[in-house]
Image (cartoon, rainbow, N blue to C red):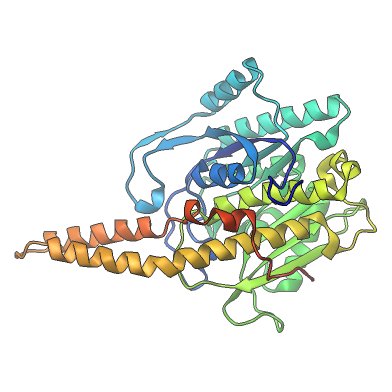
Length: 376
């Protein structure tokens, strides 16, 4: 691809996502806090990098649920199936990749899984197994708490083996592997278990907060692995500074950028890998040379730039908002007015925490890579 053109060849992506319930989280390590805000960020991120994206929204909400108030409706499992059938009827189902995010109900998740399995089966039927790649984010919870109903967990476990790349956080990796993650060593065991149990070729664990002698204070890490032909992990980690701030939409952004950058890294590797099932590199390829590692480096570079720039302007926006709210407040007695002011400030803070992607699209396209992969 040309230096100033899209980083990937023509790519059709089916993006299936939904906003989760609002979860209150500590902010000191909030790079991944409030992870999903529907397809808005995912679609923009992928389109900005040259992908043609079909968005299958599993909710229609007025705004993301981090505001703690919204209007709209959820889409049923039957509606998801019907929407996809409509795409097929119009010959609009020629997807190269699929990204699936937060789906809270077991029936809806099963419907999404059936779509992915159909697309993978079609690729195999034409003897081009590498022509479709499914990125699955098994969104179930975080920090020891489930976002979803208990019956969603076994559905995810049944679907993982059909995915090419999964993006669990630390808590979700524990659920999938049944390994309690307490340090980098146990994290490595969890990755190995998932490779062996589900035969999932690629794994990236996000929002890892584990101390280690070579990790700076107030840092997070992303840990990834591409398995070998005998299901052995090839693990790497990328350590980066945490940002002491609240953000909305980082999970969607990370997942969407992984879709594009993974395809870019594989494309640069050559046509042979592009045609290989699940884009799994030869066993001789070192962990640090894996397309997955190269993709994760570029994703985190974009993430860090956008989050830093968003944080720099956030406090200024909030100061202006506080001044406007307080200047318009009418003096009076009673607590209702004070409560209304607090609510308005909270909503304005949620707005200020929205990632400034449109203003910083060059950070998506041309990030400067500072944080490099290291072997586990």
